[in-house]
Image 1: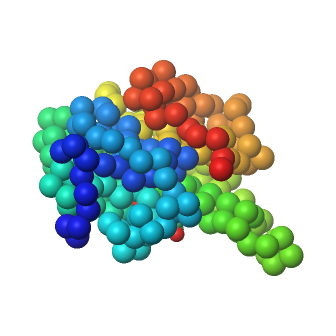
Image 2: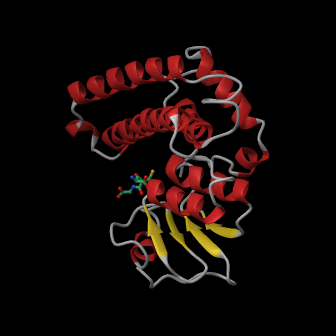
Length: 215
Ligand SMILES: N[C@@H](CCC(=O)N[C@@H](CS)C(=O)NCC(=O)O)C(=O)O
C-alpha cells in the first residue's frame, strides 16, 4: 500500500491512545526517537479517512515518510525494529530471552483481544441482544490469563535485564484493563502487573502517550 500522505516529511500514526495497539506503536516510536505525528482518531469516528490508507479500516495504521501504509501493530513493530537495528530493537535477537519476551507479548495481546471483544459485546450490541454466557466466558478467560501473566512477568523488567517490548505491550494492556475493566482488574489484584504498570507510568514515553477519556 503506497497511497498514504505523510505530513511535512514525518511519519503519521493513525490511532488514539485508548487503543493499546496504537499506544504501543506510539511509545515504541518515541523510545526509538523516530519523529512522527499522531492523529488521535478511531475506526469508528474516522472510518473514511482510515480507509484511504488501510483497507481493513483499523487502527493503528502507520504512514511512513515515503507514504507507505503499514497495518497491524505486530508488523509495524517489526518494521520499526528493523529500522533501528538489532542493537536498539526492543525485541531481542533469537535467544531464550526473545522466547520469553514473545510469550509475555502473546499473552498480553491475547488479553487485549479478549478485552476488546468483551467491550464490543457490552457497548456495541444493543442491551436486549447481549449474550450473558458469552460475557461470563470472556470474563473467566481474562481472569485466568491475567493470573498466568502475573506469574510470568519479572522485575525490574518484564523479561531479562533491560527494557523490551514485553514491558511496553504488557504496560499498554495493563492500562487498558485497569481503565476500561475495573470490575475485572483493579489495583491490588495482580501485584507483579501493578509493579510493571507503576514502572511504565514513570516512563516519560508512557506519560506522553496519555490515555484519552472515553468518547
Ligand atoms: N491485530 C490488530 C488489532 C487492532 C485493533 O483491534 N484495532 C481496533 C482498536 S483497538 C480497531 O481499529 N477496531 C475497529 C474494527 O475492528 O473495526 C493490531 O495488532 O493492529
